[in-house]
Length: 314
Image (cartoon, rainbow, N blue to C red; front, side, top):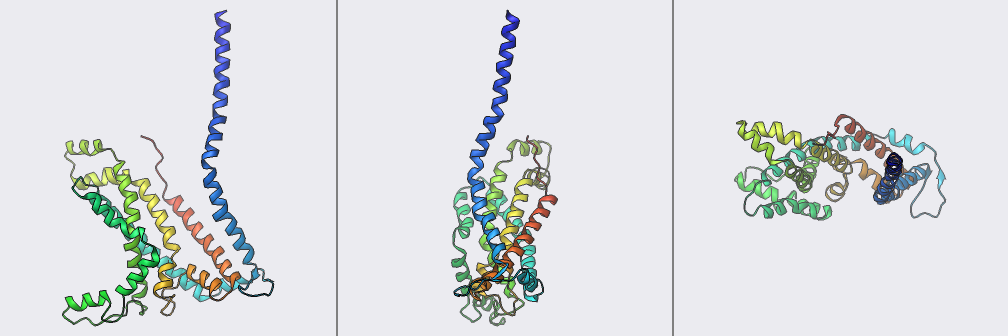
């Protein structure tokens, strides 16, 4: 009799265990449903719509019906030197901003991860530029980079050089225009990466540092052997997100330089927006968007392959 009861209990346990994965799957689907809906609504559907529009000659503010173009828009884009100049500017911008901004964010996070008075005030101060809209930040920096003596940067250089450095046209020179936009972007965005890295730093167990101190490890050794491995996944995330943000560069260019001088600051996003809304060529703008989406997606996949996260759970 006891043997029969044991078999029945085992059968009931097996049924409960079989039903649990189903409930877990349903719960997981419910929790990820908002993200899937957002992905479909704001990424997949717009991409399909852009791909469809890119096959037509669509003119905004025109009563004429769309004209079938096929792949002609893509042929014109891929044979246009201006498109490649914009793509080169995107790569230069990302190649400078991603490592510099990540290193600055890491340094600020290490500095602000100290138990000192008023540290929360300093954290807010460094994060504040992220809260400001990019349009407002760009307007302020346009005043800073003004080419006359009233420009704050030129006035500062004039003062410290006792008048030996003449006013520089920061945004009107092909040499300094893109550099000026890079400086602005790093200043505005470093606080976002700093907060993420700071959260990663606070997730590293303090017992590891205490054990390292007992083993007489200096600060540099602790940084290399504890901090960097502990921040591996966080840094990978920061690099990938910063790369995506760098390639969508538009606001700073539109407000500060309008792609000039001589296309020195034009970007692919700027070309797509101006084609659709300034030149009224929606088909060309959609085609540029599709090509650029594929390029950024390819870069992201390559980064994902090269920078694998450590998924081991301690």
